[in-house]
Length: 397
Ligand code: FES
Ligand SMILES: [Fe+2]
Image 1 (cartoon, rainbow, N blue to C red):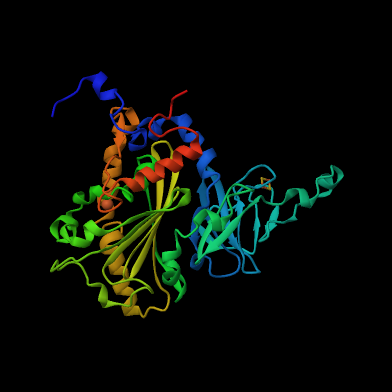
Image 2 (image 1 turned 120 degrees about the vertical axis):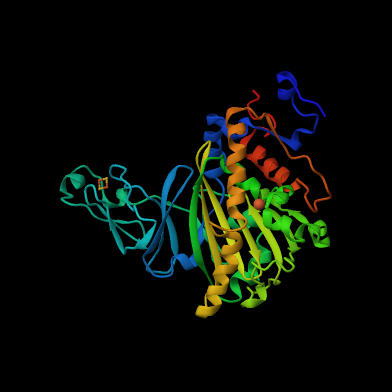
């Protein structure tokens, strides 16, 4: 063990280029702009669960790749995604996070749009007609939108990778869980964090950090045999599945046993399972609840993370109270788990932002089990492919 001078500190690690990341990938504004263009604007992006738009004309707004968007359930039951931008002079149409509107009138000059994106009214339209600017020329911009097991995704690319090809079998393990009985989102909160978006995604792929969590150290979870046997499955397009790890919190009195309410279909009571979907969404389950978090890059060093909790729709009041507690004790804003992960991402950010830290090391190999860094290497292989630059040398000419 020894300290290093500047030259040694900045020298590339003696590792394969797939096994480390240059921290410029987290901070360089040109790389960030490229990510918006080559990754965010071309990948299928999770928007919401169908239960968040239950009625005709329900809408929900979301920003992605710096583009304001709105999802609307139409009178025909279909969910469509539009640019949340007025085609007249660019005003934002919907300002609320969610609501219900059969038609939307722009506040600025009162053009009005229906749920199919048609422009159905323009005050005093005569001069537009004289100028040959027809109502057909004034509709909203729509982007491809698809659903899988009730999970709604959109793509800013008009000619995207086919939806089914993009996911392949990566989400198949959740088919029963999400379709056998109706489920709904019962929890939603957001956090703006001072860290690059990839640092949050990494917190769900880096299982070597589990020692950080007080609750995991205090219980016998990290010494269980299943902890070392769990598998990491890699799928095309950068998706990863961390196969179930059984968790036993022993006699830790503050953790409510999962048997206390109905399990989600296909899940075991005390098994943790997670699936990072490239580029910015992670699904995870633990017996009675599913968590989905989605990260929106705002600037190179600021990110918005949305957290959803899903459970059975037909819960009794009593069951729901238990389910909410199951969710909140690990994944709520004041839980055992989430604040520690948010703290860790923000603690790493200054070193990455300033270049004080030159490299992120992702070289652990354990046959894709236990705390292998293979999930992160898989993510960065896809990142490098789409970006046309290596994550380990992203600024190389
Ligand atoms: S900007 Fe919307 S009507 Fe003019
Ligand atoms: Fe964590």
